[in-house]
Structure formats: structure tokens, C-alpha cells
Amino acid sequence: MLIDTHVHLDAFPDCDIEAILDRGHDVGVGFVICAGTTVASSIRSVDLSRRFHPFFSGVGVHPMDISKPLTTGDYQTLAELASNEPKVIVMSEIGLDYMEGMPDRAWQFTAFREQISIARALNLPIVFHSREAHQDCLRVLKEEKGYEVGGIMHYFQGSLEDAHQVIDLGFYISIARPIFRLPHLQEVVAKIPIENIVIETDSAPQPFKKNRDNWTEPRYLRPITEKIAELKDMDIDIVEASLFQNTKKLLSSQWDIVTQSVPNS
Image 1 (cartoon, rainbow, N blue to C red):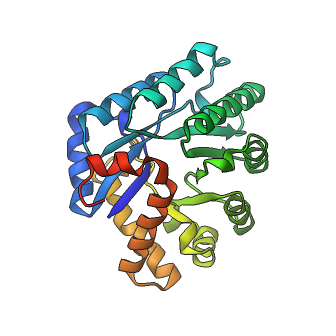
Image 2 (image 1 turned 90 degrees about the vertical axis):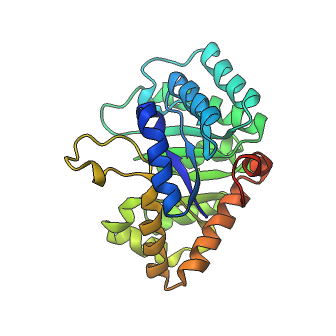
């Protein structure tokens, strides 16, 4: 079974989601975890998780979407969603983004720390975003004891040194489609232990791609897994089993919820 640890299917219209999940199922995708990026998208992700069995949710506010300081009410809503909805199984997507034009860094820091606190209080793994902010992300996770719940550095594209720092802090490296175009990432994947890797697609609508068939969907987990096996010179079945066990370990505190919705998990 393949598990997509990070998607944004909430951004698709309802009428598309079942077909997207079915196409994933056809290549062995057992379930997906949809990230929240705002309070509103977190609410929508949770709603979708109620309607689709192989669909689980994260809640969180993405650093790119912090257009103003988050309020006490925002944090309370996220905490209530995470504590009251059984299919919320991660705190996602949170973190820091230092790309030019991104929101005020002080707002980002506060939001990151507060959401880590929610994750720790509710024993939820943390799925974090880091762009041009790796050292500060890892520092905040260390200071706020995010390692107590662990989690994932999502859509990893960093160096081998970055990967070792993430792993040493107790987090997994999540590999997506950049593995096909970034030689340095291929080298990282070849060198780090398979026990430290999970996979994702970061699926979201891609209208800039003229051919709808080329939009990234959970079904692309299959070629991602095959590429990992090729780079590590491992049997594909062993790689798939390892990735599954890694994700199960990551979600160990939530796995009973998973088994209730996903047969043979």
C-alpha cells in the first residue's frame, strides 16, 4: 500500500475528488492526508475526510497564508478541529517561508510556535514547510520540542546535510516529484536510509499545465516509489513495504483511526 502523506485535494471541486482518489487506488494508493493551509481550508479538508473513506486530514495555517497575525480564535478553531475530528491525524501544513515577498517573519514565527504547541498537546505529528528557512525551522522545532511528536519535512529538496539534520531531530524526509529533475536530491535519496523516507505528491490543481493528464495526483506515488527503488538499487516490493512501515510508525498514535477507515492497513 502506498500512502500520500501530503496533498491539497481540498483545492479541487468536489466533483473531481472521487475520481482522483480512484485513479490513486488503481495504482495501490491506500489513502491520502490532506493539508490545511488556512483555517477555512482546514475546515474544508476535515469536511472532505468525513465524506471519503481513504481521506484523512491535517489542520494548520501555511506560512505563505499568514496575511495578518493569527488570533486566539484561529488557534482555538484549529485545536478544536484537531481534538474533535478523529480523522485529523497530523498538524499540517505549518512552518516558515523566507522567499521574497512572504508574510512578516515575526507573524510566521509566532504561528509556527503556537501550532507546534497544539500538535504537542494533542500528540499529532507535525508536517512542516521550509523554504530558505531550514536552520530557523529546525531551531524552532527543537526549542518547542516538536521532536516529541515527530513528523515530516514536506516536499524535501535540500542537501544531504539538511537531510541528516532533519533525521537527527526525529523527523522523516518526504520525497515527491522533484526526485525526477534534481540530481542532488537523487544523491540524497540514494544515501539516506530507506527507514527515514516517506512519500507525497503535494497534489493541487495545476491549470498552468495544458494537459490535464499531467496534473500531479496521488497516482504519481507509483513512479516516485519506482524511482526511489532504482536510486537505492532495492527491490520495489521492499521499498514499498518500507515506506508503508515508516508512515505507520509516523502515525502510530493515530493508526487505530486509520484502520477503521482503510481496509488491510
